[in-house]
Length: 270
Ligand SMILES: [Zn+2]
Image: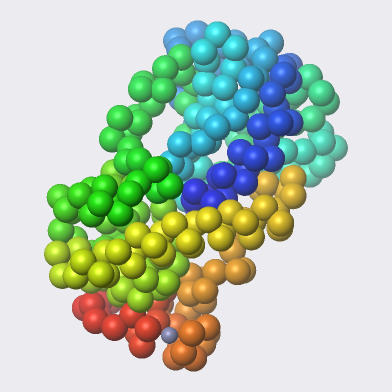
């Protein structure tokens, strides 16, 4: 699942390359992921449009077009954007192919068909837009504490739900809890002030370092998800980089990885 750092790099790659480029053709190989909120028709509304730039909000990638149209891509679990030459092999389960006026293609593939591509004239029409929490880098520690307060559940679940803070998913949720030395299943209500402060600091440092790492690694192959620099996520059974204890993995609701020595406490659940 692409999260804030992944999408931030995709934005950096696509923004200068798509700005000023026209969508020459729209091929809906599998139209299931497409949500046309304009009433005009997805392909009809897009063909001939010029893109003005790419931005990001939470886990949404926003491709801006002329006349205030916007394409909002929510990759969910398995969606991938591919920026390619037409002769390059399509990824399995490619759903949408935009042919661009510069001869390239922007493609969306999704093995699980769970993502959505909204075409809209207003961002507020996109489901979930109004509920989205602020961007992590726009929050002060005090605001972070205030936003956590209404949520009483497990801290990883709180950080990844999107209403508290936008853009954090399963992978970076694990990384933030690890760096903060907080067990991911600790209840928010059980956290001391200094633990919340550690989570805040870890959130900012984990995300910004990931952006720096990915910027060096991804290039224009934006469909490749680079995760090998993560400390605990996806590393169940391997030694903890801090203490050498075997990293735990609990696979309910998507795998959660943590080090039971560095992150003590929390209920052990199956
Ligand atoms: Zn450890």
